[in-house]
Image 1 (cartoon, helix red, strand yellow):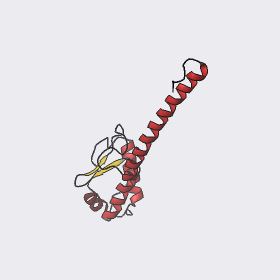
Image 2 (cartoon, one colour):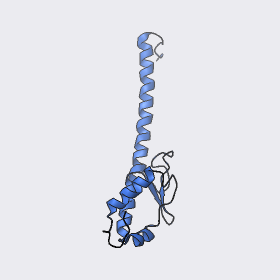
Image 3 (cartoon, helix red, strand yellow):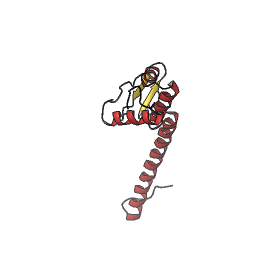
Image 4 (spheres, one colour):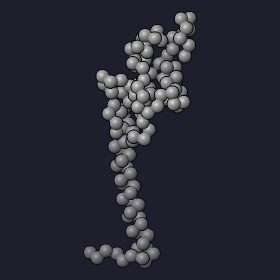
Length: 128
């Protein structure tokens, strides 16, 4: 981003793209704090809402988490989505749903294994 006085003001999309690139290039690593939104807005000469919107985009993508009163941090990819404090509510709901789907698939896999053993004659049906 060009910070010279004559440069056009960056949009939220451009700010988000810059941080996305910085995260991908490990300028910011897991658990690193991004600049405070108010200070970054002042430095870039944009409205606070512009920076908050950029951070919101990154949060929705699961790249950062926001902790009330503490700031915005790069999400640690080793931690399952939606489980850390400050996760996007959408990712929290998705993590819960995926956990349920995973459990259901595991149970179906176990049932399929038992049925295959029964068909192959390697197991006797349970006595009723």
